[in-house]
Length: 150
Image 1 (cartoon, rainbow, N blue to C red):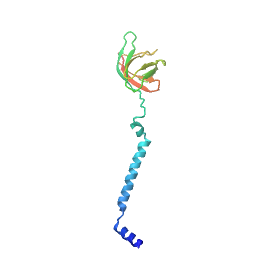
Image 2 (cartoon, rainbow, N blue to C red; image 1 turned 180 degrees about the vertical axis):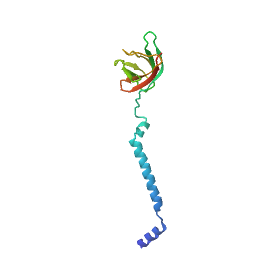
Image 3 (cartoon, rainbow, N blue to C red; image 1 turned 90 degrees about the vertical axis):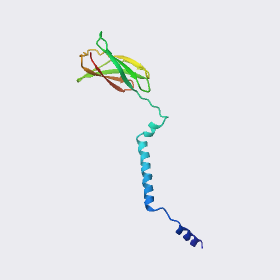
Image 4 (cartoon, one colour; image 1 turned 135 degrees about the vertical axis):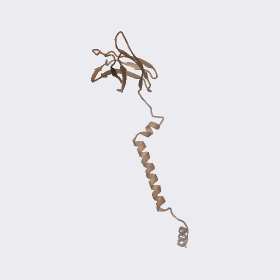
């Protein structure tokens, strides 16, 4: 008697179709794939507010040439999230590279402007030529700026 009641109940109920079941499985796999991709590329770490963001950022507001010494002074603004210490610099022009002092040690606070005087020894500036000045920070980050000699 119980068996007959079960058969009667089961006949009236319909299960999920195979097409809907396959579609549901595909949706689950796609969502899981997106979550694994986001986790593996570090997207979640960048979106979480608790992760500290340490970024060095420098931009050159302007520069001027000192007529007495013939060397440029760069006015550099710290646009990053931490104080930046400029350790050294390199000057590049047409295959010629000259390094500056390795003991610059000038620290620029966040949102402040610092003056960096470029004084390479044995380097001749040629009027009208453009030079790339690369500043190297204490964290090893490089920032390149272009100046034109006057």
